[in-house]
Length: 157
Length: 332
Image (cartoon, rainbow over the protein chains, first blue to last red):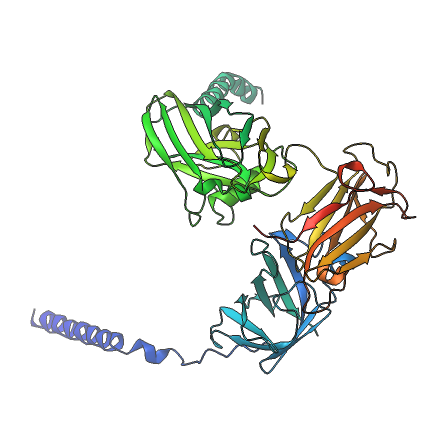
């Protein structure tokens, strides 16, 4: 009888010890376990070409001959806060200049300022990954505000 | 095997009965009995349309809001110029616009009610895609009792032609409930009807004719010189001087804001229109590039004809060779 009591007490002691360990483990500060990584500054340097284009929701890249739209020849090159255009088409801006993000780490829009202009023109900016490659999606209206263009650009290798 | 067949034969009436029951139970439907709308109006006038609809439910009771969509030219801004009231078996009430931020029931890509209606119904029997569906809902939910067949008359008062332009158009009406919307598999719950052609007169400028096919169609309808513009020549509308001609070219003159003309009228690869359907031809241009407009200058408009390869046979506005079609670079 005495033996049984001792065994029970031992088991109880082990249980209390285990519970104590769990409390101790749970009290660890979880944020220390998450590695501290700074969100990278979005780098879009390079030349970008059109991968898809819509006007008012309708595909204009594959349904209209390129000889009429000249979309495939268009390119925009970003270098150190500046941009240049090749073979212009309806776009946010018509001439080269500088660009800025609203936030370099978490950009939601991009502003283009043509050289000599005093005001910037803004477009929404999306930076999705498609087939392992970054794409840049810009939404803008170069003419009437009800005509919405969405260009998705891919990097020209 | 024989036993199995016998069993199936015994069960067959039961299956048939069940199938009939399911059909009967899902036999809810909404019907637009009639649309009463004037045939003529003056620009800016308020017209009254009466839409008579039946709401037949099986099972229930159901408590839902009723939605009405109206198809009208964008420039009429029907959403701001319309008042809808209803009366009938469910009493009387008013309807209010559905905010653009609300996602439509049964929308596939999170589109709002106006977009859902446009995607599903297009512009109906009209010919110019410069129209919008404007959604309204009952201010409160209405309850249909078990197997009720309720009738309601919707009185739609709207100002037409507030843009001051002479227009003929077939307005469209769709009725549905707020929970099911325009679901693909239940077209019986969203009847749609188009009124006869409404002629709005007393305004300025050429008639904008949504009701009849025209020789030249622009898309988008409203553009500036920095937009892409598609021009379609429909050579099936009537007999033209270019009948049976398969190589069609655009002959165009652009006007700059400082009074200069830029002509692009050579019959070459640049001005050649592509065939998009038998005897339908289309060209897409970016006016600033097509007319090589110098930086700093803007275009106010373009006059154009369709020609044959020789450039001698021309078709212009009203199917004559002396009056050009016109594009005015204006937004709203």
